[in-house]
Image (cartoon, rainbow, N blue to C red; front, side, top):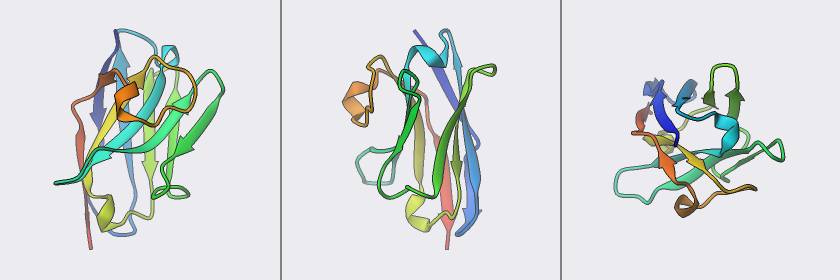
Amino acid sequence: QVQLVESGGGLVQAGGSLRLACAASGRTITDYGMGWFRQGSGKEREFVAGMAWNSATTFYGGSVTGRFTISGDITENTVYLHMSALKPEDTAVYYCAATPYTGRQHLVKTYKYWGQGTQVTVSS
């Protein structure tokens, strides 16, 4: 199975940028579909971005489209989430996850492996 460790969270002003990293070990990231989710205080966990290796596609949740970009570095076995034009409503714990299913997986229940999360706080 794969182990996932996120990093790169922190405090940023509205309009700023951050890059989150998800380092994988145990298996390679191309063995899974990879995704980023987030969970704000008192809210349900929501899909942010996903990457399907088999179809070489990326896909995004509606609230981040055009502002966030998911990418992967096979040599580093790491998935990234580049976040720009950040808003206070982007404040959340961000989680990296891996799914054994192919296709555009955006449901929490289809992801089997999860990292511990990294806090992103956007100040106004």
